[in-house]
Length: 528
Image (tube, rainbow, N blue to C red):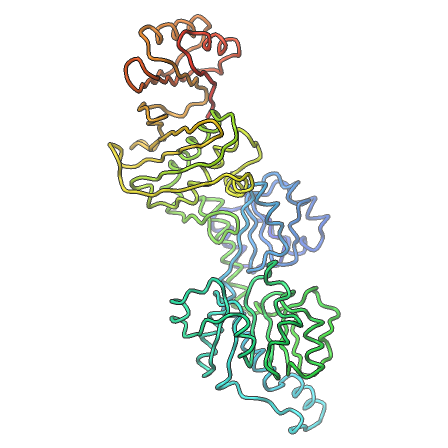
């Protein structure tokens, strides 16, 4: 059955056609996102939800969307999506961070010109029949210092354009490396240094707890007199009341504001002030950008729903379609190893170490680790999934270490999981054979080979003659049909392990009888 996608905001017809061409059933209802009650009634039964900014994907919406697997946002901002709630329910949230980058950067540059030369006010005056040349005295951009707060994808494009305009560019970004700054031709500086030096300041950073109100009265006090401020990033980065006061006092000569703390912005302390240019969140509003992000989100969602490929997800490691095909058996292996350890663990897990050896070490281990954590935690927390497993592990204080290395031992590639609890340390390893099926190859340093089966018995015992015969006799006497018997031991007379695959789940009574056999240390049911 084909996956179903609901488009609840306006997307280009080309994007809708992408879904159809890829074999995805698409339901285009572009006004549905504006009516939360109607969306709530309609969402159940869809595998994907494609949106722009009008649709609000709330916890309530997620709660009734039982089949929902992916939310695709045509654009960058996901302020209208409960990403935490989606993660908890295993719903991937994707955006399109690069589809409108050029458009947004160009809008910031356009706002800078508009503020520097007072173009909007001059246009209104001229069309009113006035000729006020002396009133609209502007400033040149050439030779001025542009301060960029946030030099990521969009900020770097602004930097390139500004350098082409012969501006000096300084940038503040905690994640900007020295090498990248040199490559861009910008000077990496502290925020205070940027505020003191810049003639123009433009913001291109996400809205987070750390960046909220980054341009406030205290920051403005550190700026040059006559500075001009541009914000085409996110409302809330600028404290509008503080900026308005600075413009009234003459400290700030002008501002170009495309985003507001509350949108739609029906009122703002900045409205009506001299040389304040305001636009209604037009950063991505070009024909090219709208087409780009719509088509891109459709392709990404179709890739995931049809091939398992993950691109530009906010809550899941990226996986290409090629990786998805190659990694699928290793994902099953990782989840199986985690499940094996999770079903045997009875005390608090302090930390785990995941060893990737051979070819698997060159794969996308982020996705494999997510799958392994999902398997490990699911016996304890039924709501855990590949999307939220890393966050759940972190919230529980579980230390997760990864080790990648070249081939070791007789197997070309393997994954080994070591779990540390309050009482002990236990390891289990597995690989994928040429038939594409995952296998266990080692438990607690004891070599054996076994598949992950729906119904299994895990038994540890002291190695003694006759034990296997007594175990087989007991199971046969209880009408338990054995599919496979997988054995391993540390050495003669020492610890031994039996993994017994059976056709049906073993009853409590049979399990109790197994535990009473001489030499048995542990006996547990396992299910995969």
